[in-house]
Image (tube, rainbow, N blue to C red; front, side, top):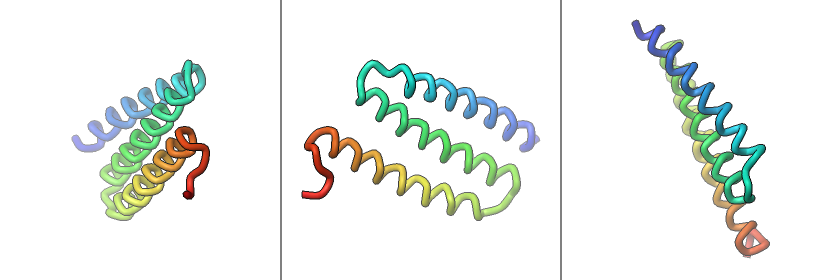
Length: 89
């Protein structure tokens, strides 16, 4: 039963990633592209968690946590660069 749920979740996350990829390519503004990239990071984290549930190991959850921290910091740094022109003051 859990395998079927993981496969359905995998398909839904893959569809969400494709929609985010479309928004990343066709975004009318730079901030729309940043938001699409941040949402892609969140969907990739969900994908890693689903793979961890599917295989039944905790290693993927630690990888998802590290990926979340790096994704958050890169989004904040990129937004700060767009607003102010530099990252480090």
